[in-house]
Image (tube, rainbow, N blue to C red; front, top):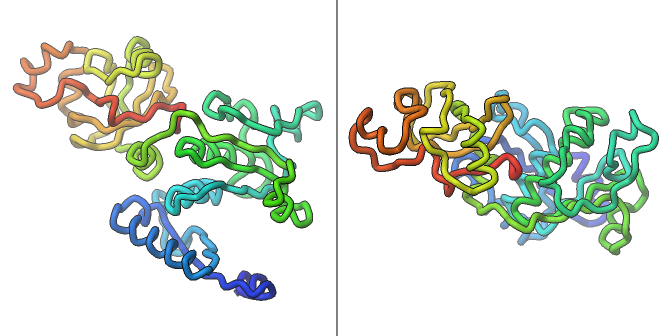
Length: 287
């Protein structure tokens, strides 16, 4: 009702759209949501999107509106995200803790930044903060959508933005974009378990673009089936990426550390030699 009244003063019509992760996880519901948003925009109705907190259990929550914004950008094929915050933009350190922190007008390659170190966790109130805004911007950048992070406390800020005034921090899209399918794997599904790999396998995945083979598997956590999305972690516990596994967890425990030629001796004929094929893998730099 508040949005209706506020926009009505400018003769604009709004519609409330409530989403959960489950709405975007199911392909059919994803397309229904996309069609609804497209129809509203065709009618010149402004969608007011929020998380449906009344029905969303913890595992179906986006977590914050920054994450939701990046998902909606993919849903509607957005050209840009304008993320209004309490800060003037992005700084190279947390300005609340370091008064010498320098303002960053443009982030050319967000995939190369250590966001945790820059933000030192959350900045500001609520479930978000600058860390969540930059993580959302990284997601959006991976599908070719730039983000402008700018203070919402400034008067007429949106008019100034769309008049191309240089304010806030511009986060450029990445040169190497994720396919829609890999974006789906990375952000719409939840890992059903974890595969721990040795240092050699981690380097092969991240530096050489290889598939994950059983020889590099050191441990398997969880009980997942073939085709499940799994987290791939290094020996230090850090996430290497996520991907779709070609083997059940029970099978992986039998063949971990084995060469590809030894797998059939243990499991019999297998249609796949790779534990996770590189075409079904999204690395941590894209997450």
